[in-house]
Image (cartoon, rainbow, N blue to C red; front, side, top):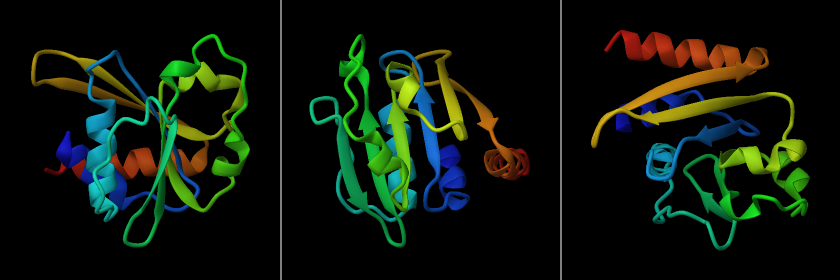
Amino acid sequence: MAMFGETLAKHLSQGDLILLNGDLGAGKTTLSQMIGKALGVKRNINSPTFNIIKSYQGTNLKLHHMDCYRLENSEEDLGFDEYFEDEAVILIEWSQFIEEFLPPTHLTINITTIGETERSIEMIAEGNHYSTIKEAVESELSND
């Protein structure tokens, strides 16, 4: 997962929206930590379940990390547009709970638990920009 996070981070730029899906314990927060570290975030990235949104400064990019788990069955808009319009990389865990607020273009990453330490990662790109990122990451990882 570390290699995937590092590789993905190399291809991210301001305004990129990444949706992280998977069951509890699948590794969404771990992947967020790997991406943040690769972006140069020095602070410890942990799950923002109770805050919902935490922001970090990386070397060149800001990172917004959202955990929308507590928003299940909620129709509350917490000002998501402000974050989506910010010049930052945005990682959202449990994005299905705020689907109606999401921009139409993004990269979805589905993490499936295979075994105790093994995960399967699937990327789904919505929009040309994210298709380019997906292809670059897949190409780079297939060379390793």
